[in-house]
Image (cartoon, rainbow, N blue to C red; front, side, top):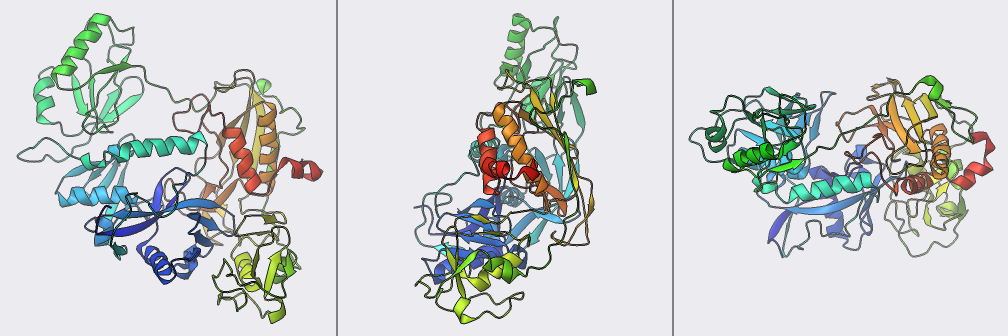
Length: 591
């Protein structure tokens, strides 16, 4: 057992492997539902926050289900010290590009509040996996790579719910541990996050000083394309190395110390990586300023002695290189994808469907149930034999005889009124998805804005696929105005990072994935309009739950190759959207 009492924070896992907290009000609502009925199977989030009306949490599988898109995300119930930021009602946020405020991850917010309570002048977030520096004096967040500053704020909010009694040893002991998927993209992010979380208590600790210096930021160029951020230097390192004018010493943006210009007859091409073992701060590679000829063993030994004298371990290595794009390709080298007689696909604005009311659409997939079983409707959590728990607008009067229906294919039963309300909260495209087993009825479509999709074969091979060429996909979506199917109709939306280049091996399975991606594009399921989980920007074009590889010649970010399971994972993700090879063959119009 861990504590006699703790605060509970419910969190959901985004596509980047980061646990994002629900608001205190939502967490209080979830805990209240569990207390009222410990055997409760699900929680409707729209009852406490209207912005979350499409979302339901399934407490048995510990997943969040979005009714309009069918998206599943793992959730967890985490416990924290009552004296931490969540327990005291302090919420730390950063300002996004849209000028609104985005909350930090729970662990990051706790670390920031703890550093402030210790009256630290600054906090390096590198041990938590983020290349940022928090400056409490100016209340800014500084990007260690770009040195861009953003405002931060501490806001008083409702404290997260407090629970008492024996607590499980697990950090998130409610329900099984879940992974977003088995692809290397998600697994890599989770493994890095897990490795850094164990050392979060060392954040911002420095050797004792009589007067803490204020962080002064300046750019320190590092040959070979790297860069670091100069921060105040601990006295021990400064006394050891500052007398040498040929040395450039500074604390890296990730918290490590970078050393360049050590001098010597030959130039250093291998990189010296240094880190404090006590806090496992990520290492910063540095090159000699004078050139890049092979390192001499004697010079490497002298360098190691100098670094050891400073009390720092030494590692000689070559840095991995990020390769986002292939070598330049001329137009004459671009070839059509075998089996496809075209190389471009466009989408236009969605055409409104007429003649079918929501109730008519839902009834098309239902069978009447004369004697409802003694079970609860998993949408409203009320007994099927009784009236629906839905009290909102948009549903007309429904007779007692047809108040409960059975979905024809999967057999799950619900209140007709609940299914109509769920349909009204979705895309209203004539399709319906079972909230229990996710079976899709009809043809599911999304709200992807108008754009263009190009695809062709380039004469280069991807890592892990040396025996075939590469299919390059180029997505291009311009900014525009949101339509009635989007979150904020009539409001502008942004489109960051376009055109976006993605890559598939030109193999039989790679071409199969491309064919199904074309169907997903036509159904407007590749992208959506919403809030970016990366930048926090709202009303922008975002990926819609189908993984793409945007890194051509490496896999440093987890978005590249080699990844043996990537194609199979994409096929499963497309199947979850109702797109399969069998359906593609049966619908020649989509080819």
